[in-house]
Amino acid sequence: MDDVLDNAPFPYARLDFPLAPVTLYNIGGPARIALLPRNAPEVDEAWRWMVAQPLPRLVLGGGSNVLISDNGFPGIVLFTTHLTRMEELGDGRYRVGSGVPLARLVRDVMLPNNYAGVGALTGIPGSVGGAIYMNAGTANGSTCQFLESVNLMNNGGLRSLEMDPSLYSYRGQNFCGIDDVILGGVFRFTPAEEDQRALFDHYMLRRREKQPQGHCCGSVFKNPPNDHAGRLIEACGLKGARAGGAVISPVHANFIMNEDGASFDDVLGLIHLAKEQVRERFGIALEEEVRIIRSR
Ligand SMILES: Cc1cc2nc3c(=O)[nH]c(=O)nc-3n(C[C@H](O)[C@H](O)[C@H](O)COP(=O)(O)OP(=O)(O)OC[C@H]3O[C@@H](n4cnc5c(N)ncnc54)[C@H](O)[C@@H]3O)c2cc1C
Image (cartoon, helix red, strand yellow):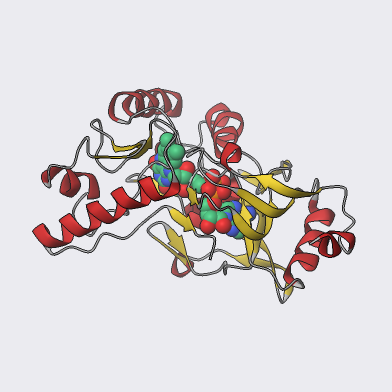
């Protein structure tokens, strides 16, 4: 173990780095090695080193859509948190680092300029990189539709990819592989006629009214075509179902909350319960939106 670190004499490398505090679920054991590069050249250096090691690898942004094993991650976790540069390029175009919180993009760029799209991106926690990877969004739209291009590190090196609707789908994309890192992207916004500040207030209020507050990952499951995962789970009578410290929210059945020191297995147990009952009752196979990180 120490040999591995001896070969990676990065001041931004950490051993046995606790992951629970950097996830919104507040669940997960330590990463064997965490790399927290502070700028783009360090990400380049860290990523090249990481992919050369015979260890499992994971990239993390804001940790708002992951459920990590209590045994931790037995490999290397690369954090993009410090890639927080944002640059205005003119004509509604902005180069945005993957570590910029999505909420900051909305607050500092979209709202002051009344750019269209606030209804799609308001209230989503996490980083721009995570939002691109997940194609995060709402019924009103999603992150990748506002992208002109994305910057990636993969085994072909650093590349810029022009965005195209064939490259993304509902809560997913096909341009960033499991070992790749999204460094950021160029967003292109257009001014809206509708008052985006009023929309922002509306959607924030709606979230406060309709979504539970606390440690969670947002929606656990993707919505199946023409239906809602929350409606199906609720129809199975599972609101309020518990396993250890985890509960299927009585407020919104697609949210599984870490209410009281829940373990990875507690949450996973409820995920399996919901999938099983929805399949039995409706013949529908729910698909997880949350990324489940096992210790392998
Ligand atoms: C209260 C709450 C509400 C939410 N509401 C919504 C919502 O309305 N709509 C929605 O879509 N989501 C929602 N989410 C889920 C989550 O916020 C989004 O999926 C978010 O975009 C994830 O970003 P992140 O930086 O936290 O990603 P992380 O959780 O850090 O990572 C998520 C995935 O992306 C990968 N990843 C992250 N950054 C990079 C990178 N730079 N390069 C390559 N891969 C990367 C990770 O490997 C992982 O597979 C909600 C979550 C919570 C807790």
